[in-house]
Image (tube, rainbow, N blue to C red; front, side, top):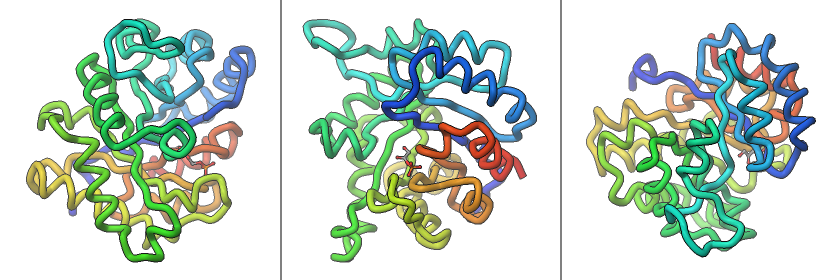
Length: 255
Ligand code: 13P
């Protein structure tokens, strides 16, 4: 395992939080705190916040992401947003297949794959989420499920496109619960994802892919998590809504 070939990426996922005005002030507060980061810093924000966020982040090292993208280029899909729309708005990253979308909005492995292909085709970087429920873990299916979700999400994604893919391992039982996976569990889950990529694309390619951990990652546990060989940063929910906490996580990944 060679962690030095991969750059850590710390991405905030604001979920359904912050108005455009609040987004602007939070990013203004974060900018000086993360200016010296030695990792990529991304904030994935609600669609409506994108213009304000892009404007506020201008000239800084903060990149802006969206939280979802539709898989069609245009058409009669009321309420949806296309990859080209995001791109033109200044978005560089997009979260795809978050467990909240899988649970509440009928997202499937197939739609996750289609959205990933659309994002990559438009030149966006895709942060694709995978993760097992507590029940699946207790039944012993974690490895099988993570490998299946990873391979399904990457169907028809080329080796070249894979350079714009980040996988976020987010155990569902650790999201928003305050129950963090242990650093060993995070490393093991990320390792299953990397093994799935190796099976599909070869070891060398798998070594180059950034794999994040997400799920109750915070200022107190980030150090231990990102120190693990397979954990190349994090996808942060709650702690990305507080500038000092987010900055501490960025600092942990910058070491
Ligand atoms: P929390 O950090 O709030 O647990 O959320 C994690 C997450 O879902 C990031 O996408």
